[in-house]
Amino acid sequence: MLSRMGVDYYWSYKNIKNGYGIFDEGIAVLSKSRITKAVCLTVSREDNYSDWRTRKLLGVKVKDYPDDIFFSVHYGWWNDSDSFADQWLKTINGIRGYKSIWLMGDFNNPAEIKGEGYSLVSASGFYDSFLRAQSRDDGITVNGIIDGWRDRIKSDAGGMRIDQIWGCRKAEILSHRIIFDGKNYPVISDHYGIITEIKIP
Image (tube, rainbow, N blue to C red; front, side, top):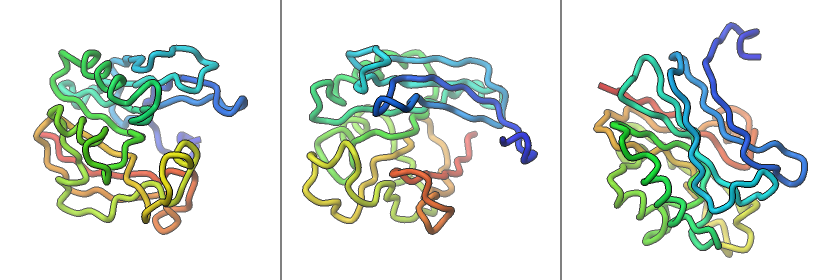
């Protein structure tokens, strides 16, 4: 579809689980630079397509930035039986050896809640691109109570910033803004998108 519009991307996709009994749920990375390597890490206890608790990370290395690896992520919740803390430990063990790491996606840990997942990532040597951005909006990626959160929070408290981009490399973050929120492009999901401009040395 993108090619028909005159836009060409390299891409990698990994199916992870069957959602709601009908959806082939997975994660993907699209790149304007040629992908030279793709890796997949299982971070959940379960590794079963029929179990919705299965969680994986998909990472790619690209030709134009050979020192960097870019991961698309989708984690579980802090207080789940397969907790975010356990999944994060598996992540740290799985990404050792990479020089520069970017983690992008649904962390299922609101930035507004301290002492849980967001704080754990921050204490692990990663920085939140939102906080370092020279230009940014409010960063809210979920505006309301959605599946997975109905029994976890009593109100949406004005929205949550659970979709994030974390890096471990000293790069200049020029901008960070929300898209697909009904203001900047139509809403296409219960999560809004993030578009970030990063100047990688």
